[in-house]
Image 1 (cartoon, each protein chain N blue to C red):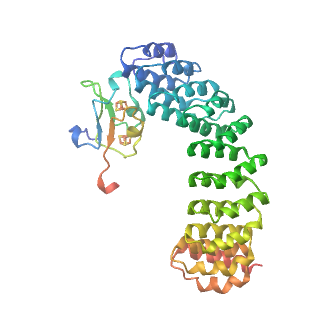
Image 2: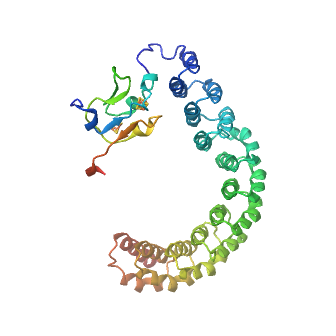
Image 3: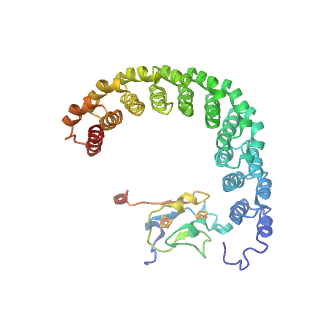
Length: 77
Length: 320
Ligand code: SF4
Ligand code: SF4
């Protein structure tokens, strides 16, 4: 799987101000069937580590703080 | 689960409970989530305590987490959350409360049916519906006179779920409520009854000023297996809303009202394919030989579902 290059260009974006991964939350990481999300060692927040996605949405739906946005490409909508 | 806990079961709850007192609300919130995941029987007790947290996001998380639990203790915690000063917490609690399945959960909720807040009254009745306890009947019937329309609707649903013929007169009286939404709920709730009285009351609702009330009444009449409403259903075939006509056709078919056949046939030519589909099915259900020429004339209907129903209907009539 390709590593995600820049966080801004990947389909799943996490709002660091809202994310409470540094408090122990791992919901989005646990729920992703592709296992492409991680908690960053540097920021302590969730981020998309691998640029691959099924757009299946549980990461966005289950995040307790509404920090995750999945950007579905126009063609798939 | 974090990777730092090699002995997951061991001491887990104690460790989580310690974090409920952490100065950081984010940490307390995650502790609530972990508590919900722990499936520990004592979790509900701690969750209830966490409803006293000063941070709204912690209380919100508790209200959401309680949806995963059932029983009287859970209900006992949810009635605390449903009167929360924060509207988001209260709404989450109301939604979690509606997930309760254990009939014993009704006991802590029943006193809240007369709460001063209409939101709390409606939420309590909504939760009681699925719990189907006979003790809910009296407070629900009392709530038929509530000033709030949502409360009245929820009360009707509670009574409808209990399916007691004793409550029929009260339910039928709600077909005359000033609020269309309440009348709609009442029309749907009468579906459990197979009495002539219910059919007569629903027949009157076929001329309600609100078309959705008429639609639901027409639909419910096929469950109330009584043909006293047949004339009113036939009259509803000229309703200005095709949705009402569709449900009337369905009920006339299910009730096997042969007199309606000439009045149903013109719907085979309607623009709306759902109506043509329904008409074909009803004509088959009634098994009326006089419908054969009209059905045959529509064998090339542009809609495949309509064609399927027409073939089914013709097969059924001819096999007679
Ligand atoms: S679920 Fe939300 S809060 Fe939790 S780690 Fe993921 S982004 Fe952060
Ligand atoms: S949308 Fe699905 S596949 Fe994509 S990151 Fe979220 S959970 Fe993983």
